[in-house]
Image (cartoon, rainbow, N blue to C red; front, side, top):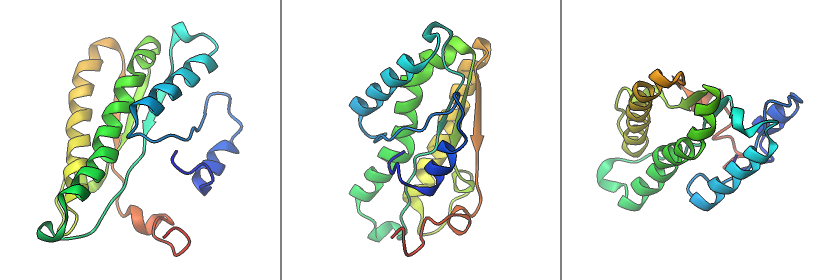
Length: 166
């Protein structure tokens, strides 16, 4: 979680489950991700049994036509949406494999169909879909499940672009 004070984090934390933990980290930082892997590993009752699940939900989006969107914007969106998902998955996969657990990647309907003025987002979500498919094939013989969730109109369903969030 980038923002530990977000309503969604508070709601998850209120579940009081010893099997669910929210942590604040920057998925673009390999150092932060590795620190969180160590925090999770040390909090497991038996690290040798591994970890049951990982949900990759970090994501950002932008609006703008290709011609007017900077290459830097493309790189920033890819770093979070695609490379953050890959980085987190690769870092936690040894723990997931031990438990024959599950990886859940949050993608988007725009990972299956292109949309004007959303190319950085669409490109990265197409990438998350492809990464998930490859990972699913590789993990199947090891008993690890890989799922993709493709929310529809995420902006309308959340407070992502509410005046308080902007």
